[in-house]
Image (cartoon, rainbow, N blue to C red; front, side, top):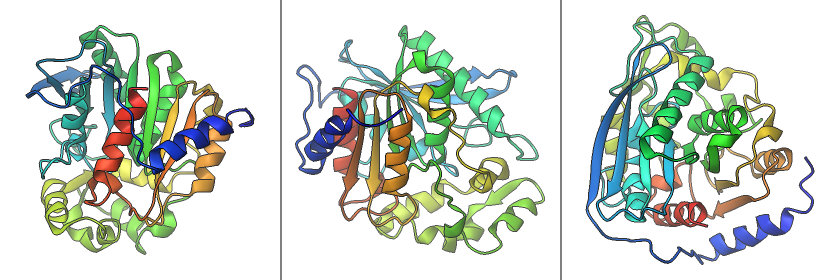
Length: 316
């Protein structure tokens, strides 16, 4: 679908975000105790998927429901960082949202296949099971989705398959057609394929991940390296798959916000604009976080801007 006719909306939103003019709707709350619920649901094949829910006791019933999709080598905790006030889940919960984040198969408290070989289709079907549960649990017809990296691929593919279930997409570290292979160390794929038990020990790949984390504080780096210690090889291998995975992109109808960095070196603004030109959404936006590295949501100088931008977009 041509992007002409929507450029005004894109750049209007972009100017608002970059200039720091973040507007939140009347009636939302920035205070209140954040409550936690742990859910262990059954996926399409009976395997267990862990879902964390956060909300406030003085929950604004008119606020929306959000499902978070974590990056390739991380569990739900990526969105619930305990360091300072970095937690996206807490931030959105205090704005009145019910926020859900789940551990993909092979991560955290979800089922761990013994060989770590998890296909892309299985991950999509797990996501379908999670969204179905959230819709039923929350008694709503649609959810907003917040996603980072590989999680953005899963969220967008769900929006392609089930456009009627998605009312907004906020995407970070988003790649549509740009290959990420060039940013990986030599021999990385071979090491993945040679893992005897199907799980990559991330401590052995510390050097490969130091670059993307260079804009984070030592405390955040220590938390990431201590929290995310292994990952099943199946999801990681998807970075070598031919792109795009999101097709046909014109099936996406929900408003889309892409949060882009300028120093991460992996994503491409051109790639993002090409994606926005392909989808059918009436609202399509890019927020460029100047000076941000690969993970602005966990970077001291940028995380609060990212959290406010996401809350504003989902509350529009």
